[in-house]
Image 1 (tube, one colour):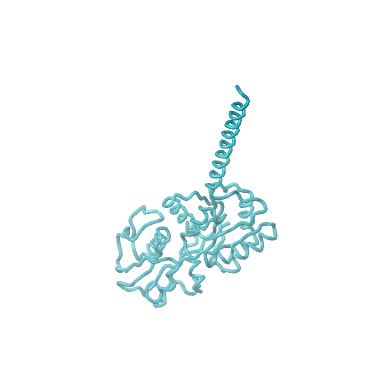
Image 2: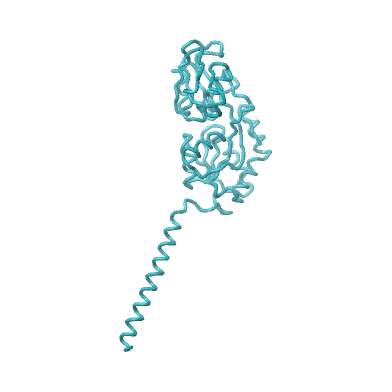
Length: 281
């Protein structure tokens, strides 16, 4: 082989090798870009999503306590029940504290979220409020009532109505009955399904309404003074701390749960909410 041919052949080999390395590097970067989040590192700020009311207040208190133990926490407040799980699943936040277990399970079923609960927080009993009547005995035929429009909290409200014998639902209906599952409505109640956050503002238009505790607290409604019916303390709707499945064993998030479920936080909840919000740890 002549020297010139040899050098040209060598240049071709080097060029092909360089191009191959460039392709491998590009593919490696592409695969990295598909990752929605990196594991929470020991010195990383933990971003937690909450909704207004009790969950937000408790988390603000907890933030101060956790930072004494070396955890850096940033709180992001959401005004609805949908976005906190989307943000968690997409890696925009690391953990959220706003929902009960049936709500989370329904969200996973509907949206395919890869999230899981890693600890319980509180039970915030749902209650029925009214600006027009003072007891269940005053409910009249055809009265208008508002309930949340999401499946689990709407179902929770219907189960609360059933416990007061205002309606009857199909047997063995589970935790997410709908209005279509009502089989008896002796007072012919008109039931309106509204966004949970809007319900406190609907009280002047409705005869009564079922309000989630966090929105009740935010609207300055006191379940002990203002409610005409409060959900039992034995409710199955305990709130949970949710994370992505990939982070369920993350040491920093496990530490987060351990510090949250402390006697200090428990005492704050009992003192601040005087029984209207109950710790379940």
